[in-house]
Structures are given as structure tokens and as C-alpha cells.
Figure 1 (tube, rainbow, N blue to C red):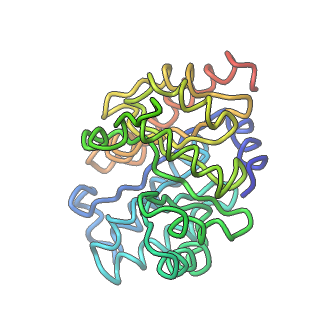
Figure 2: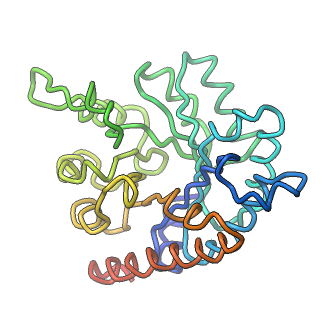
Length: 273
């Protein structure tokens, strides 16, 4: 999917919502256990309930690979079920030496056909660039994450006054561009979005941390939105686990529509729709 196609989908749906498919078998409603593949059945119903209101789905790969072969099968069936006009994110957080990254890229872009994959930049150029060799595929580079441990390294000040995450952003522009690189930026770090936008003004940002983790959608839009929206705001637990009962899909629909309506208002306020 190209950047233009993604922005067109945002305008069409009046939404920049990404639904995180963090489908923990321990948390899905118990009545689904009677199905041959409870995780896929759960995801299928979530997708049916939310696809009108979101522009992306983001399975966190850990929830699937922890189940072994069956988990990978559930993931592939889920990916195949997602409508083709919706952007898909493999939240795999890969990033290894070059030959291994080549294989990870083949796994997620060729074997599974995701649109994008999250990648850790710590090992540098040769761990990232293999993912950038695919047309209309995206690397989503971890830049400034919302977890507490992110403060251990990402906001360390360098001698030139930059934060370490700013060094990551600047260096990454030697590897890719706004048409194949996005960045993970936690909503709980919204105060730093202005600094980020000075470095990557036109890039898309994947924003976790709104809702359950305390991030503000309004702050994210105020400081992070650009003239092609430039945001994919993720919500996982707040949507997919809005209910643990047989009405879980209905409640997921309610919650995703609430967020979409807020996003529509924000897009209109920026004259993007």
C-alpha cells in the first residue's frame, strides 16, 4: 500500500484508527473455545465489527507465536480475512544482522504478505535495510515508545543536545524515506511530537498508548498531525476486550465508532476532509 492509498483510506473512512489484534487466548470469551480455532473466530468477529471504522489492523506477533504452529495458522487466516483496502501491520519488533533480517523480511512480506513490520533499530543499518527493499511495503521503526523502560535509553541526551531517539530518526533518513519508513511514537510522549515533526515532518507515525495507557488523542493530533494526517493511532485492549461476554463484538463496534467519531472531528478541524 502506498502513502497516497493510505491517506485516501483515511479520508474515505474519516478515521486514522488502527485496531490492535492482541488476541490473548486467555482473555477471549470462553464461549469461543468450542470453535476449532478460537483465536481466529475472535479476530474474525472483531474485524467484522470494526472494519468500517479503522484503516489498519496490527496483530502483535507474540500472541500468536506463543501458541506454536496453531498460532501461526490463526495469524495467517486472520491476515487473509482482513479486507485488502485496510493496512496491515506485523507488530513483530524484529531487527537482527543482515542475513537474518533478510529472512524476517521474506517471512512477513513474501510468505505472509503484510504491508508493514515493526523493526528495532538498535543494530543499525544492516538490520533495517533488508526490509526496505520491497515496493509498497513499510518499515515501522521503533523511535520513542510508551513503555516505562523506553526512558532507559531513548531520552538520553547526547553531546550535541539531541535525544537518542532523535539520533535514530535522523540516521534512519539515510536508509529510507517517507514512502517506506514510519515510526513508532508513544502517545504518552506527545510533548515530544513537535521535536519529532521537525525531523520527519511528512512521515506517518504509529501511535500506541492512547486510552488504557493514558495518552491523549487530542494532544497527539495537535502536535503530530500533518497535511496527509500522518498518524495511525492504535487501540487494542480498549476495543477488542471492551466486553468479555457474548456481546464482545458489538461492544468493540461501539468503542471503535466512538474513536472514529473523535478522529473525524479532528480531521475536520485540520481541513483534511
